[in-house]
Structure formats: structure tokens, C-alpha cells
Amino acid sequence: MSFLGYVRHNGAVGTRNYVGVISTVVCANDIAAWIANQVPGCAHFTHQQGCGQSEFDNEVVHRTLTSLGCNPNLGAVLLVSLGGEGSVDDIQEGIAMTGKPVEKIVAHKMGGVNNAFAEGLRLARMMAMDISRVPRQEVDDSHLFLGAKCGCSDTTSGLTSNPTLGAACDMLVENGGTCVFGETTEMTGAEHVLARRAATPEVRERLIDIVTRLETRITSNAAGANIAQANIAGGLTTLEEKSLGAIVKGGTTPLNGVLELGERPDGKGLYIVDTAGQAPKAITGLAAAGANVMVFSTGKGAPWGFPFVPMIKITANPTTCDCLSDLMDFCMDPQGTETREERGTRLYNEIIEVASGRMTKAEALKIGMYVDIWTRDVTH
Image (cartoon, rainbow, N blue to C red; front, side, top):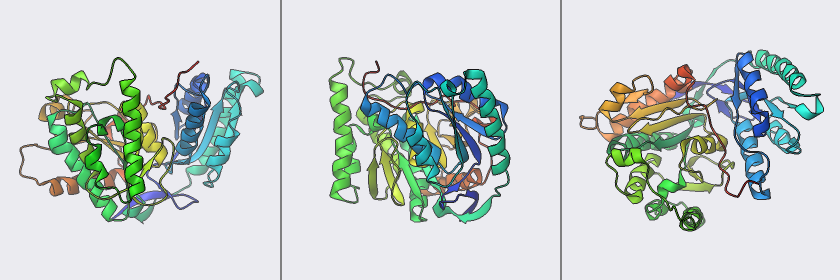
């Protein structure tokens, strides 16, 4: 199969064509949002990180912002820095390696917020006009990079919508594409099932390592880890039960690699990225890995989108499909006659259409765009 995408200088293919206005620190969020909201064709990425952090977390933030800037859905990037967070030259240089235009404004070096805003507007307008000349081209579906996410799950998630997403993921991998999923919290108790699919002993060790690392952090916290109230209301009883339903969204193909947050795969196939379970942080990890389209499987309903990656919302809960019809893109009947493969094929066709430019409901509403970066140490 094929879709209509934007071919980039490095051979990657985008499903959207935005100027990414990326804040490098929480203190620059407003400037980035003001610029993007004034210039058509821009999408801003803001977050709560970037200063007062450990060396480890600072490296994670810079690596993640660099990878987000490298996402093929961005045709150009404007970095917005306050200046007090230190140099962000490494982020600019990393993004520039893709061949796309990258500009930077630093408020402390430009005489304040108003000057930075004015210069940012000028640069963003120029880049938006420039990338608007890039046409969509027909490419085969091996250029698709699917990010798989589930959230606000209920019993229909593990039984129907997650397996459907897994079937679509299998189809993409079989067609030469890439699929990534995360949410390490929701692998806990089921990691041994995933480990059987590891392509190499090293991949298996990495998988066990990220889960063990998370379990150590959880057990050191007196609050422990519990499933959300929405999960309980949806009929789930334990974290292990939730995990067993969650991991099936990754399909059945061999697991080719396990990525740290902000890392990108070095090949095609199925990958895991170590992310939080919380949606704003989890979907950032998928976009940073390189996903150019995402599917969010939900039971009780979740509003999330992403600033520059289209998010297809799917559910197998009839009540959710009816009462949240303005959020759900794709519904299925858990008691219907369709097989997993038939539902997966129908979803795959939906992914192709969205990748070719069809707007999702989250994009139309501009809802759920408040995302963040998962950090682990104490912020001081």
C-alpha cells in the first residue's frame, strides 16, 4: 500500500508539514506559543522542563528535544530559548543534521521578550512560506512509523481495541514499516511475556532492565503503584491485569530493540521506548522516537492529541463511542462478527488515510496538546 507524504532531505517521510516552534525551557513556553499561534503552518511544543535539573535529566531533555525536532512531520524548526538554561547549541546542531532549516532565538541575548517574539515571528513566517512549497508525494507504507498508545483503559481495551491496534502494527511491520510503543508501567507484571519475543538476548536484557529499574523506583516510594480510578471503574482489578491487556497493542512480531527516552531506532520493525504511563509524557516519547502517526486505544475515553503528529483515537466501548463521539475516530463492536485481523485491516486503512492528510478529531479540536518530558531526578 502507499500514502501521500512529505519526503525529507534525509529520506524520512512526514505525514504533516509544520514549522516546529520548540521551547527549550519552561520559561520560554509563552513566547513559543505566541509565535506558533500567530503564524499559520506552525505547531509549538512546550513542556515543564529545562532548568534546575540533574545532569542526567538535562541530558534526557536535550536528547528528547533534539529527537522531536528531527521528527519528519516538521519541515523546519524554530528553537525558543530564554538563555538562562544554558546553551542549546547541541539541540540545534542535532536537528540540523537531518538537513532541515533550524533557527534559534534567545530572549536574554535579544533585549527581552518583545524583541524575541518579533524576531521569532519573522523567522517562523519565512520558514512556513518556504516549506509550504513542499508537495506530498506517493510513497510506500514502509515509510510509516506508528506510535501505539493506550489509556483510560477498561475491559474492552485488552479484549478488543488493543488487539486491533496490535494487528495493525503487525501489518505495518510485515510491510517493512516501524511500530513503537511505551508505557513501562503497563509492562510491569507482563514483561516475561514480552521478553519471549525479544529478537536477541541483549534486547531481552534491556527490556527486563527498564522494568526492573521502574519497579525499584516504585517500591522505594511508600505510595507504590496502582491502577487509575477510571481503570477500576472499567472493570480492571490489578496492575498485572492491566499490563496483560496493554502489551497486546504491540502486536505479535519480534521485538527488535528497547530505546531510552529520546532515542531513535536504527532500523525497521517493532520497538519499545521507556516512557511513563501518563499520556502527556508517553506520547512525547513516541514522537521523539520518530512516530509520524499515532493510534491511541481507549476504553473510558481520553482527549489526547499531539502538536505535530496526528493521533487516531479508537475504542471498543459502545458507550464511549456514543457519548464521546467528538473525540473518537474509530469504533468497533466488542461483540461483533469481525475478526482481529479484519478489524486490524480496517484500522490500517484508516491510518493510511490520516497519513495522507485526513484530519483527526484531536487535530480538528486542537485538544490534548499539553505534553511534557518524563524526567526522573529531583528538580531543584
